[in-house]
Image (tube, rainbow, N blue to C red; front, side, top):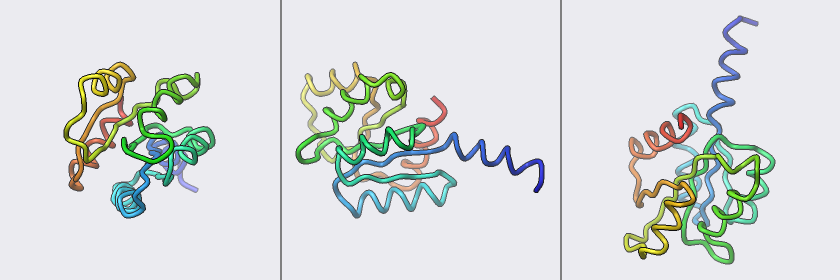
Length: 135
């Protein structure tokens, strides 16, 4: 085993992203695109599973859909911000809802979430992921 192998393992371990989106096509597409760029990716199709995976995987960043049934992205974000080991995980809300109300936008900002709008092209998603894991 080369000396570079442990360093490569550490580098990839610091590039773990959790994608939480109830649209399987979006979650799968984001996952494939990020994996091609060398990220380790876990996906969840609802917020409840996303919270479980966040506890288990301890991601370096989370890409989160805003509009999901039962528990939405804002509720998910509030929950992880109350957990000491997840409070500082960078989060990007990705939504197709271009008209966020002032209260929603203020909540997202106060919880430290970046907001991006769908569709995200490959280069936008990769740039977002890189910015999240480096913050």
